[in-house]
Amino acid sequence: MNRILTLLFSLAALSAAAQVTEPVPTRAETGADACPAAIAPIEAPFYMPQLGKPLFRDVDVRLEARADGALRTRQIQQAIDRLAREGGGRVVLGRGVWPTGRLVLKSGVELHVEEGAEVRFSGEVEDFLPAVFTTNAGVELYSLGACIYAEGQHDIALTGRGRLIGPALGGSIRAGRPQNDGDIDPDTPVAERLFDGRNGRGIQLPTFFGPIGCRNVYLEGVSFEQTAFWNVAPVYCENVVIRGIRVSSFGTPCGDGVDITCCRNVLVEYVTTDCGDDNIAVKGGRNEFGYRVNRASENIVVRRCLALRGMGGLTVGSETAGWIRNLYAHDCVCDGTRVGIRLKTRRPRGGGGENLFFERIRLKTEAGALAWEMLGTANFVGGLSARLPAPALTHLTPAFRNVSIREVIVEGCRELIYVQGIPESPARNIRIENVTADTRRDTSVSAYGVYKPKPSPYVIDLVDVDGIVLRNIRATTDKRDIRLVDVREGLFENIVLDLRGGELRTEISGDGTRCLRFERCEPAIVATRRDE
Image (cartoon, rainbow, N blue to C red; front, side, top):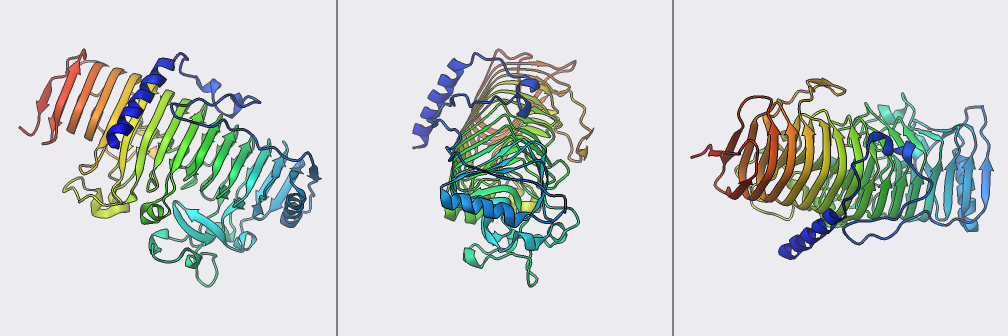
C-alpha cells in the first residue's frame, strides 16, 4: 500500500510541476486586502470539490446597537433561534458596540457583522455556560466552547467587515485556572471531562470561532482581535470556506490564527494573520485521544494567504493522530514568521501527514524557512525527545511521507532546510525543488525577543530521512555546512551555494546512510563520513 501511495504521490507531483506557469506572488497579492468578491475555481493535485457560500433564505433581521453597555446576548441569540425555526436567514448587527456572551449559530443562519460594528465578548465564565462539547488541541471535553459556537449544524455563516473582540481582559476567564488536559485519562468517558470553572474545576479557554461537527460552514471578511486562545478553529466539520478574514493575536500564548482539526473539504484563502502562535495549521487529533476518534483532516486547499508574525506560517501538526492528508498550500507569503513551512509531530502523537503539496511560496522568516520536526522536546515528551535509542514501533508512532515543496523564494532566513525524522519512522519520499534563498538574515534579536536556542550551523540539515530529492536549490549563505545523518536514497542535483568565502563542509554519519547521489553541485559536495 505504501508503494502505491508513493507512486500516486509522484504522479501528482509531476502533474502539478507541469502546470506551474505563474510567478510566486508578492505580499500585496495575498491576504485580506487582496480578497476578490468571488471564489475562483479550486484546483489541487487530488480530488477537491468546488466550495462556495451556502444558500440562505432571503430574510434579514436587523438589530441596532445601544449605548448602555448591557450584554446583548439574549437579543442576538433569540434572533438567531427564531430565524432557524422559521427556515433560516440573516441576522445583521449594525454599527456600534455589541457586548455579549457566547453566541450559538444554528442551521440556515448567517450572522452578519457590518463595518463599524464591534462585537465585544464578555470576560466572565458565567457568560459562556452551560458547558458544551468541545476539544482542546485534540482532546474531547466539556467546557466553555467558543465565543461563536455551533455543534452539529449545517449551512451556517459569519460574515461582514466588522470587528470581533475576544473575552475582556481582567475577567474570570483570563484569571481562571486553565485545565491541564495532560491530567485527563484517555479512559475517562468524555461526558465526565467537565471543566466549567465550578467547584474547583478548571476551564478550557474558549476559542474565538469554533464550530464542531458542522457541515457547510462559511466565514468571510470579519476581523478577530484579542483572543484568549485559538482564533478560527473548526473541528470535525465538512465543506468549510474561510476567506478574507484578519486575525490579530500577536503576544497571546496559543493564539493560533486558523486551526483546521479533523475536517474534510476545506478552502482557506486571502487570510491575513498576525499571531502569537502558528498562523495557519492543519491538525488531526492528539495521542491516544485522537487515535480513538480516528478522524483525518483531508482535502484542504490554502491559497493566497499572508502570514505576518507567528511561530509557523504554514504548519502541519503537531496533533497528527487521525492523519493529515491531501493538503495543497500555494501562492502564499510569510513575512515575519519565525518558521515558514513547518511540519511537526512527536513520538506519542500518532498518525502523521501524507500527500502534502506546497507551491509558489514566498518566505521571510526569523529562523527556519523549511522545518520538519518529529522528535519534540523534553518539556513535552520527556525522554522520548532523545533520538536514540529508538523505541519500538507502536500505534502512536507518527509518520510523514509524500511531501512536495517547490517554487519557493526565501528573502531571508537563518536555516534553509531542516528535516528531523525519527529512526523508527524516517521522513519518507520528500521532494524540494526550485528554491532561491538568502540565509544571511540576522535574527539574534527579533519580534520574538532574544532567540535562545543555539543557531544551527547547517544550511541543509537532514536526519533520519528515507527517499529525498533536493533539486535546483540556489542559496546565498554565511553557513558552510551540510549534515546528513541516516539518510538513504537521496538525490542532490544542481545545488548551488554562494558561501561568501570559505569551503563547503559535508558531514555524513549513520549506519543507515546509503545510495546518495550528488550531481551538478557548486561547490562540489564532497561527502566525508564522520563515523568512519
